Length: 97
Image (cartoon, rainbow, N blue to C red; front, side, top):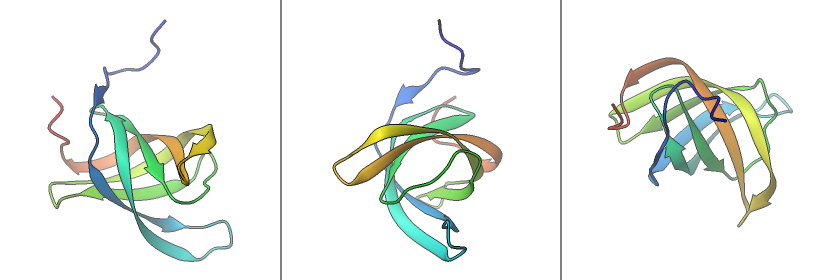
């Protein structure tokens, strides 16, 4: 049974992710999307995060969001950690309507 509010679309695109790591240090890294919806996404990033953490996600200057980590998928794949995020605030769109 699907519990998501909005359908997801498979979309692989480069993104920038900003936040604060577990030691309180600011970071900015490149990652990519696996799938997206109007309200969230599954993304791959090269670091570990915990559910509940806040991230800033942006793509190609047409989309920017403050997002909360809602799920961490294990194990990591190809050195990238897969995480589920839900947008709390956003500007622009992914091309998903």
